[in-house]
Amino acid sequence: MAVKRYGVLSLILLLLVAWQAVTSFFRVPEFVFPRPLSVARALLEMLSNGELYRNSIASLFRVTWGFYLAVATAIPFGLFLGRQHQLRAILNPLIQFLRPISPLAWIPMALMWFGIGDKPAIFLIFLSSFFPLIVFTTSSVLNIRTTYLRVAENFGFKGLRLYMRVILPAALPDIITALRITLGTAWLVIVAAEMIAVKSGLGYLIIDARNSLRMDMVVAGMVVIGAIGLVLDNIIRLLERMPSVEWSRVRR
Image (cartoon, rainbow, N blue to C red; front, side, top):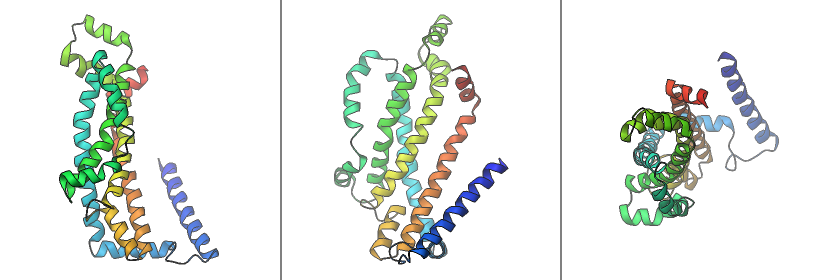
């Protein structure tokens, strides 16, 4: 663990040195691409006036609601769809038709339906998470060994009991992978949506800084977005340590 930590810190330090060296050697103007020290000052400025805190909380609030709504609906529906062959054959073309449509393409309709504020952003996060989670969850159910299901049915596992005791634990590793990928996508979408659909959040902070020609704040916002995304990914990865997840992976 210590070696890994030092390796990450060394990589970050190397990137900062390379960043400073390249911008200095080629004499890149600050308004084109600011130097690390300028970005650090911008971060301190936004921290001191509370701007960074307020916008980060706004983005996290929208992502949390949209992502949780998608998880609460898509995963149960995907688990059910994985066991219903006829219903899956009917709905799969519709899902595959809607899934490739970028959530950002829904922005005009979201603004018309919900107006300016949190609701359109939450709706876009929901869309960006819902369809991938359904596909991943359904696929994970289809990949469960039929031997497990037959043994469970022989022991009288049916209905909700079969789902909770056999299907969900067996599908959990793939579902957690889907959660990691989908949360990353949701975090990406919220930043893009906030540049258009709302007046707060990290995306709005970046577009507002750009309009003010504060490229140091733009890059500072990008750094914060990446840092929060890394933290969110590590939080999801904690689920991989659950005993049922480790057992399912070993059994595979």
